Length: 577
Image (cartoon, rainbow, N blue to C red):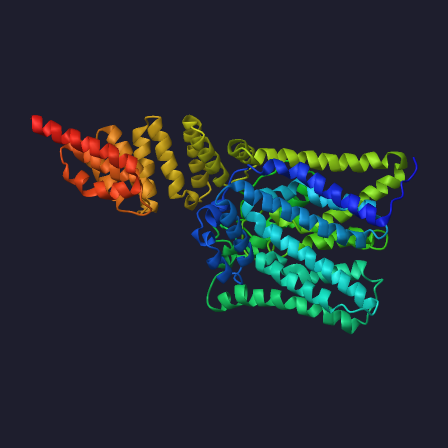
């Protein structure tokens, strides 16, 4: 088979078209995917993103740039999830194009292999969490500015070696690096990874050592400021390391010390490696448990595995420098989130930047296969990329259905009850009350058995109350509602649903009190006003109905009309008697 030789510009344009086309095929099926977990607190219920003015004022706060992008989405699409997904897809495609330009410096004169590597980055199924989980635009935007900074730094290095003006590109790289850290703090590893890339792939562009240091040192400024502001100052002021982890949602971290978290993360690295190589059994929430003891066999053997891995890559650093580069890139790029600051133990979106190192290693391995299987090398490469693309597309299909998604997640749970709670909610919203009730009970049993009853939020308990009520299990429904009230005394939905159950039990006085309590809390529940008045009429007292009629008119005119008809019927009945 003859090698087809293309003009370099045509080749680049063709590769760009391939990248964009493949990315669209794999990700455009996510436009109608649902909101999940932190999407609600950060977007759906976050009133701060609903005004562009506020977002502009908070622009230079942590995650301020990402929140501004959410505000633009809200301005254009309100809460239509399709617009948010489209932004994330375009962001991932843009990042992949920048990564392609970087990879052309890794695979010099081998544009085909640079294309293969960027397609691994583009379509690996683990990337779906960053792209399809809307709130992880944080990781996606940080990744975009991270790789843009690296590319601009490369251009500046090349220009400086040719004695051309490099100030614009260097300064742009510095600004982009700062933006990356502002989007998500894990980008603080940028200066170290710039140095790593410089050592491995920019040695041909020789400049004096002092100039190289001059170029690199300013990139440490923003990460150091981050470390001082987000870690140093709070610790000096008396904050615990557990509180530092609040830049991601955390659960039950009160007893997790930095050393316990580090000991937990050592085996997690191997889970990440397994998922990179065999991307099966993915989950949004793995429910991975924290270690009870710093010294444990799992962490010890995992550490021994790292030692053997590093010995292997170091011994082969001359034969396979790309392997040493990929391993170092992987571990260094995970170092902020997977070492000492207590967070949730495992999330796939943390692999967005580390994926670059994996893509380099895999592509070099495919090149080696091409040497041994020359006649079938193209089939190996295309087959592997097709395999990844099909898995990613299939994973995105699962994201589209909350029931299917959480059923899939529940099969991967190690010990946490939160994914089980989410599955129960999905059943509940789909109207599958019997499955919802069984699943809620399973989640509660798991949480209590693990000593993590704090995971049982009032919202979950209220849903359990409603599910039990619809199955006519009234005693259980009352129990769950009262438990929700004990956790959140001012949660109106808990009082409202307790009133519904009490009414079905025939306890009119009790239900009247519960509806009265619910209507006095915020946010208002129009049905609580209506039911309060309706039950009062049933007891024989029209005063509450007359008192709240005007308020109900402002909240829900249709319910107010129903109430006025009930009041008229009550007056007519009283007149006749």
